[in-house]
Length: 380
Image 1 (tube, rainbow, N blue to C red):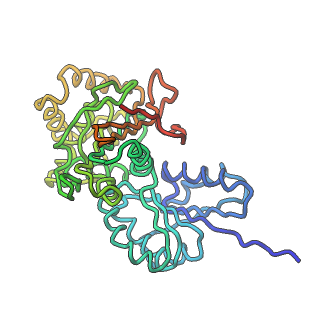
Image 2 (image 1 turned 45 degrees about the vertical axis):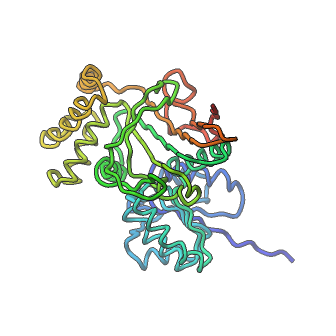
Image 3 (image 1 turned 120 degrees about the vertical axis):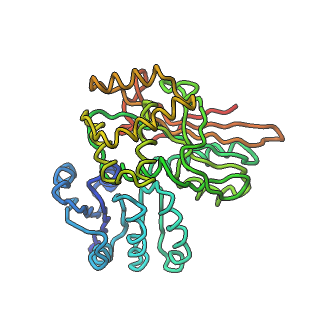
């Protein structure tokens, strides 16, 4: 007598997003011919047609889901082997999906890089444990890959004193970004951020603390980054509570972009422009359009601020503006980098892990094709 195996369902919510598409492709390849079924949901199901046709025939279906419809959400996740949330902004989407998964006792995974929703997930920890439901948050590049890099670097020291988590992402050509992505970015460039300082959780203002790092390859040995709101200072102290300082610093490339983003974000924070106006403006710039004069005033104010503080030179800004006016895009540059400082055998030690840097002269020309492989190791 043979026993028929039941098909296991993996539910992807927000499946049309770029990062979620990568996850779908990886799941499909890993599953192979096993008895799995991928259910792809998005508020715009027509955008999933190309994803479904790219997968093995019959392995995936597409459907529409409004995750803020509680009844529909619970019905969708019920009985699934895993739910993967790729829909943002996570400060709005993560908590209702986590709550539904806990109620229906379904494992949950997301690619969340939002500080507030990470704190919300930690608040649900006891409830998830009581229900026996795994809640896996921040499983992307940063956080996710950066946490693995930090854990690996920490093995080189006896005592962890400081962790600097860094990310850089760059120009990917004249293509618009998702509105949720830009919403998250704008909120990350102005306002409060939770960080870990002097062995305790404190609140800083985003973008005010800045530092330079030797990121290597095309990014050089003195690349400037800015402190930003990210989950790692919320989660890493649970693993290294004795650390004096844990922070995340990030930057957009080319460097003048940071001033523009900062100016726009401050305009939103002060209520001078709406979030929709800011997102439309940034997507106009990304796709070689002129952009709103109203928002340009705030963007130029932020750009001038970086020059006035000596964070960037006027010549570099003028070159950037000239390239933008000519609708020329620089080669993509980006990386993830983690530096752990501590003591080993009583001596001060710095241990570094970095992802392969992308751009001209390297093996990868975009972070989107960065392979999953062990990070480069550096110890001194």
